[in-house]
Length: 178
Image (cartoon, rainbow, N blue to C red; front, top):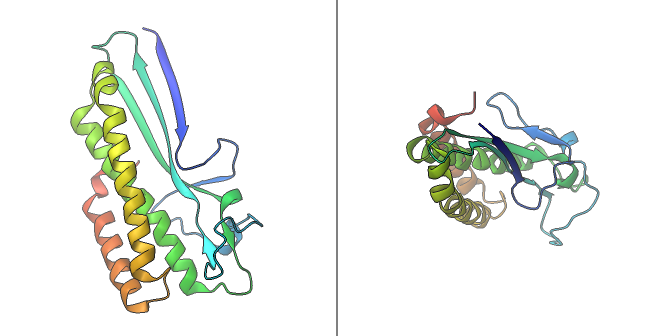
């Protein structure tokens, strides 16, 4: 069987960036934010977390052959920025939650892949549609998170989202990458 390998980095990423893969014990530190450029152009922006997914697929030339899709949640150090004069642990927690949200949506993709994609034919029929839908939901949730928490400045709402994000990770723990 002839296998094909494809890889794609989500949300403006490049394969050559310094990446950190999400893990339950892996927490971001300010030294991970290596970009010197604030590409968000907002004076209220204290930090920017550039995260998303890398995926690969191995599929068969036989449409009934197996397809294996791998999804990794990654943080791109070279594209993540901080204002050294305004950072603190509270802001770092907010940025960590952006990374955790990326993992939540990676788990949602993994869950749907397990449920719907068994063969190369399934991959060809379903993957792009389910991926695009989850990407849209992911981007909307990230924007909602920043809006409701006022980029983490609303401490009450941030605390609510901290609980919500932890709960979602727990509910989807069976779809964590091992």
